[in-house]
Amino acid sequence: MAESAELRVGDQTVELPVVEGSEGERAIDISELRAQTGCITLDPGFANTGSCQSGITFIDGERGVLQYRGIPIEELAEKATFLEVAYLLVYGKLPDKEQLEYYRESIRYHTMIHEDFRSFFGALPKDAHPMAACSCAVGALATFYPDSLDPRDPRQVEVSIHRLIAKLPTLVAYAYKHSIGQPAMYPRNSLRYVANLLYMMFGNPCEEYDVDPVVAKALDLQFILHADHEQNCSTSSVRLVGSSMVNLFAAISAGINALWGPLHGGANAEVIDMLAAIRDEGMSGRQFVERAKSRNDTSRLMGFGHRVYKNFDPRAKILKKACFDVLDKLGVHSKLLEIAVELEEIALKDDYFVERRLYPNVDFYSGVIYNAIGTPSNMFTAMFAIGRLPGWIAHWAEMHADPQFRIGRPRQIYTGRTKTAFTPIDQR
Image 1 (cartoon, rainbow, N blue to C red):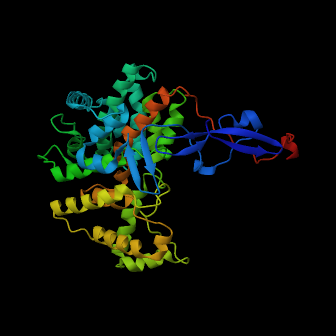
Image 2: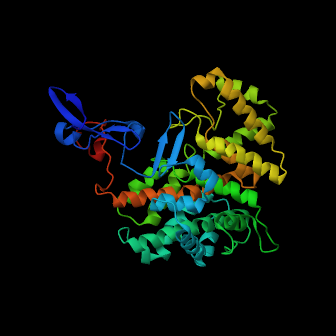
Image 3: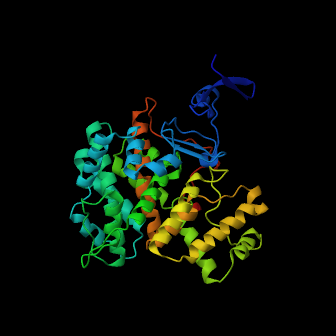
């Protein structure tokens, strides 16, 4: 007999089904609660609310586990490329050789963007934030490709998916080049996905630009680790906007805007700002930690703690090694990395942080890598968006395939004034 939970409201008792996931996660199904009792649940921030059943990503925050389609993130980081992981997330399985080659070729074929995008970016102010530019540009793709907007046409969806994965790096690079007043670089289809992005970001028409394979590998790793993270703010935004049956480009544009926020994708830039402030003020890591612990000081230790992980973020462990690899290869002496390592060592032994389970998260080291390869901090979140794109797409597609698909429409508890008569203007 299926397990159920009992809920008592006044003198009425209702039975609610208990749903169990493949990894043992349990949920009380309240989909009929309002119909049976007239009540809804109230859960600010949705911290205890499951919006869907999903087979894409599993997180166990207590044990520090992250899996894409059942495969541990540690294995994917070691053995896969970002495009393989993107295929895994979107299509539900790792590609064989023929599938991967077709996929790579299709992505290469779609990397170029319409020439009118030069005018599009040219119309933006030079100091326009890259995330604003990218969000607008992704939304504008719907005007350039009206042939593939039907979210229920499998062929149109596949074309849109390939176009988005191929073109977002080009749009990000265009946004960066516009912000620094350099000419945009056309993509080179002879280069692999991440190498092509680096070429478009840091190359120029005046000289040859050779992509460092260590830097490309580190960036590829960053994208793998950022590719999906369950029902976070931006992914939930893509699902909610997509539930209106809008096209994929518009839904992804909404996800980019959600990612822009400092409480979400903007956190890695705040880590760099913190490390730079410590360096510029000549403080030690210990001095800053003591300031962060003080109730009389507004200093915050950025990059520690996570809403989901109550243990070490598994992505941070992987990125820490990548940090050292990149800096060693580039011959860069990074005071920021020295401070980051010192802060981590102190926080992992300090009772204040241990008791609160404040461990380094993925943002703590990702910003250091972006900084080391010459990426300005206002571009960090745009780079993050490239990595997160496959996850957004996978959730959008999964939602449309769900037999229980319906437009998202949360409820509320009204706390405003009760029925009030209209006051004529001469009596106000």
